[in-house]
Image (cartoon, rainbow, N blue to C red):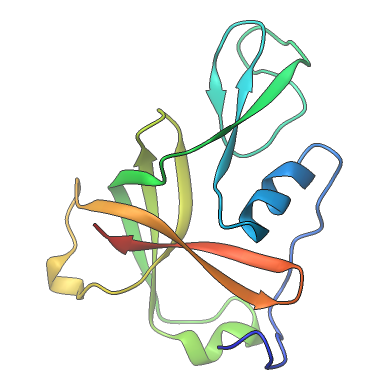
Length: 138
């Protein structure tokens, strides 16, 4: 889908804590949080470190590289906007920085999926001001 078409899927609502993540995606960067107190990396964006409970955070650009941890193939849309995407693969990926993320995996055949498959993050601008990550082999 090009950014000029109508985007009829659910869209995120950034919070003050997640806004840098969404701004990074719009610049084609995957930003992760790192606790300034204990150094723990975390994803998805959260206001407080789950380890030391610090509210101090810095944003680090991810390499965007990782390996498939798990996946599911979706055959039924949870929202009407996803009907044209079916079937699609949603992957859980272990990023090189030590956190996991979920995103749609594109560009691979079902029979080629395996745990440990190297992947990288790519970006799609779906409408003005909204870029989303997806995964591709590599």
